[in-house]
Amino acid sequence: MSLKPVIAIFIVLLVCPIAVCQESKVVDPEVKALHDKLSNYLSGTRWTGKFVMDGLKEPREEQYEIISAEKNEVGDYWNLVARIKYGGKDSTLPLPPIEIKFAGKTPVITVDRVFFPGFGTFDARVLIRQGKYAGTWGHSGGVGGQMFGKIEKMTEEEVASKKESFNKKMEKDKKDSDAKDGKSDSDDSGSKTDL
Image 1 (cartoon, one colour):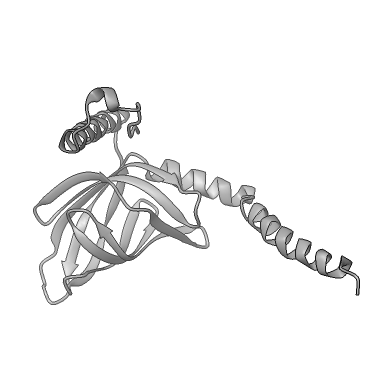
Image 2 (spheres, helix red, strand yellow; image 1 turned 135 degrees about the horizontal axis):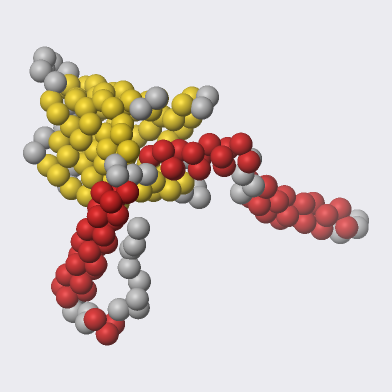
């Protein structure tokens, strides 16, 4: 029996997954244009609205600011730096990768049991359309409801100021963490998180 067919099958099995992986990195120009448009649309926006909790009649105020939005290389995930302000909490932080899917050309934020530091674990579906957002949300504490409001662009000066404040906070957090771990400034490899 010849080993040629066995070797050929082995090569096909070895090379095909690599070719498929390389092919999957090729982005359709129309999809890339959609992603670029969404990144520009979301970056530097303020979301002002209300949320209601199931069982409560009175809506409550909420506000979000998306300082930056960049498409992640993995799937439909996005890297967002955002300020979340609701329920007496107010924090600007890099969010865990957030999935944004498209219903046609309409973006839908898709959150499935994602932990937001300082806020808890959430589920949500939030549709973005013509300067407005609306959706449903749930919290691991057993509460949930609806959310809705408007999306407006912040001024360039506001965004620059927020980026600068965020970068300073990240540098301070890194120094505090390094000090806690016993590292000095001379140990720093120069890495930092900048927007």
